[in-house]
Length: 240
Image 1 (spheres, rainbow, N blue to C red):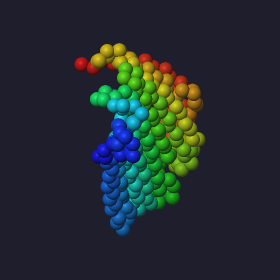
Image 2: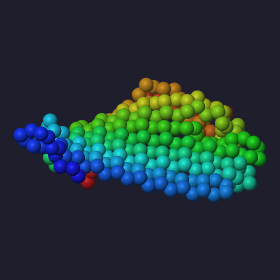
Image 3: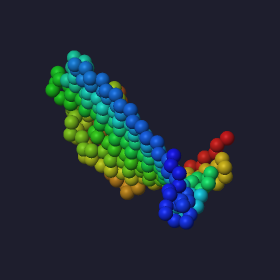
């Protein structure tokens, strides 16, 4: 941790300008004749004072995890499977002495899976498309506000009417993006009032792995079921 910055002035140092940084990264990978799997985890923490505001400091933390792998011919009928996963978390806190005056959190997530059936020379069924999520939270004491954006790419790799006991591929799907808002008010130390709006812009969309593809005895799925439109909700939480 550094001390306050020295300056050629009568005071000698800039008050409340000390900085502390900590960072690290660790990665590993396994490579074989039929594929590979690897991952990397990293972290970065920093805490520094605000010279213009005595007693106020910013505390930031960042975490990230990435995984990636591929395997050729895991089973006799499969040509190969590829996987990619990443998640990151960022937190920004404004400290006023020992109290948290402001808290901002940011979360990012992306996933991707790809598989191929070498017997039928078709994509593996019931594999979702590339998807990403970004969320942010903002807190000022008793109030907390948040937003979430979710986007999924179009999926044109499918095997019509193939799948498993949970569902079947019904054809391609278009890409989509949906946005949601949420918030809470801390009424008392153990009581929270929570509210939110999911699918804020009332987007009409269906997941590639759709509820309409669920296997129901005596029912042959022929179409997808759209996800809910705009939905407003209100909850009262009690901790004890």
